[in-house]
Amino acid sequence: MPKELLNLGCKQLVDQISAGQTSSLSATEAVFTAIKARNGEIGAFLALFEAEALAQAQSVDERVAAGNAVGPLAGVPIAVKDNMCMTVGPTTCGSKILEHFHAPYDATVIEKLRAADAVIIGKTNLDEFAMGSSTENSGLKETVNPWDSTRVPGGSSGGSAAAVAGRLCYAALGSDTGGSIRQPASFCGVVGLKPTYGAVSRFGLVAYGSSLDQIGPMTRCVPDSALMMNVIAGHDPKDSTSVDETLAPTIDFLAGLDDPVEGLTIGIVPDLTAGAQPEVRDAVTAAIDLYQSLGAKVVEVALPHAEYAIATYYVIATAEASSNLARYDGVHYGHRTADPKDYTEVYSKSRAEGFGQEVKRRIMLGTYVLSSGYYDAYYLKALKVRNLIRADFDRAFEQCQCIVMPVAPSTAFKRREKTADPLQMYLADVYTISANLAGIPGLSIPCGRGSGQLPIGLQLLGPSFSEATLLRIARMYEHNTDWRMEPPGL
Amino acid sequence: MEQKITESQVEKVAQLSRLALTPAEITEFTGQLESILEYVAKLNELETDHVEPLAHCLPITNCLREDEIRESMGAEKTLANAPQRDGPFFRVPKILDDHSGP
View 1 (tube, rainbow over the protein chains, first blue to last red):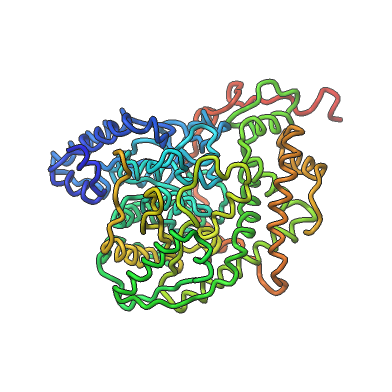
View 2: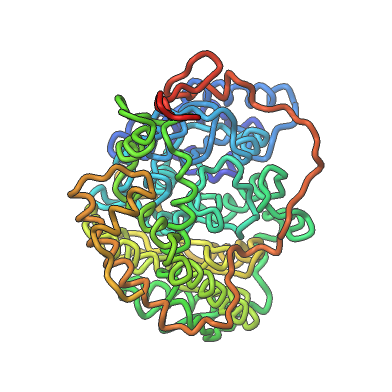
């Protein structure tokens, strides 16, 4: 019974809880039993809130029993990436500098999860300040891939992806600055959606690259992703980059989800896809064939500036990071060095002791590209190329409703395989980064198995605010395939 | 963009970044930043004289709200994470020495 219970989708679980067929308490207890059995190996969580979660589950069950209305995520155990502020437990960002930081407020997405009656069970591991593609940059914990513990879960939302895949929660929130939802979703075999920039409030999301960061759902199936979007999307006056009704009217992402998109045209970029490993290429080709067999038209589109995306990203993201992370100065919160000889040491030593190597590297790079004499050559140049990259997508979407490509060039790589050479790690972000630069939504859905049965992800990119269509296109694929297997050994 | 980054430049950047790096870190970062910047120089292949810079992707310019008084967090909550506090203040080492000032 617990196994079947854990394998339910969020929507099914909500329906069963609301109908009194099962209880939130049993689902939450099943999750904590699974966590006790497997999280020691997987290492997905930085903090767990068992007592609070069980109390919340009980409260939902009581309200159901009393015949009161409950929210759209009533009683569903959900995990949150630990770069979102929450008044329960610490908010660490996987960093020693914030190891003991307790946020004084809840992020808007947390308030929305609570208002939807979700059960927040814990905070998940990540690359420090969401900077990385393997979760190996966490300063606090190691997370492994539930499919193969010698491999990384991807990153930076690696803890969330591993928790969802490993049946340690029903869904999770991640954040995506250059692929940090989609790539771990691909590596762990789950569905990950990076919404359009501005679609989900970033209030309370600890900033890394403010013009790129976006919160999104990580789930085991497409309907769960739509359900999560129903809860977290929408305007927030506390986030000045959150869009209002005029740009993105409120919609029900579940409505019409199962209806295939009529007259669907899919764009492909053959020279880009050619760069992926053969098994990834083959799986993506097979997915395109499936869409064709479902009646979709396939057209070749060009993204001529895609090859400049990584260079552009690592200038813009690090520039924004160097500015955003200036706030960690050891004065108001976070780590402070033990015996500073003067006030400058409060800054420079606290930061040197608190930040890990990747964070230091990105702050350095960002400071350099913004510094006098280099600003025009690097930062301004990158902002201009960013415009070219976005224009590529605008042109491509005149010909198709979505572009299909791999999420990552390979399946999950071995732990410590890429840690020695930062540039090599950056280059693996080739397929995901453009969506953040262009502000468009991107979705990762399991589309096959590579060697060692490792999951492969298919990426769907759509125009701004086309999430509902993107989810329907993903659902068409999901409906006709069965890659939603659970990892071995569960 | 073509010239190589030197250790003394990296030291300067570390100082601007308020990061007390060790000599070993300076050496390591010099090599790594050099290879990253060499890769980034790829952007010079593109002619961008007539391209507008794009700072973010939304058609939002100024975002204003009514200037209304709202509840703020309060001193206790604000100070709760202070590394060192002194009553209602954040405590820090002396910034001006005894001989500063007029």
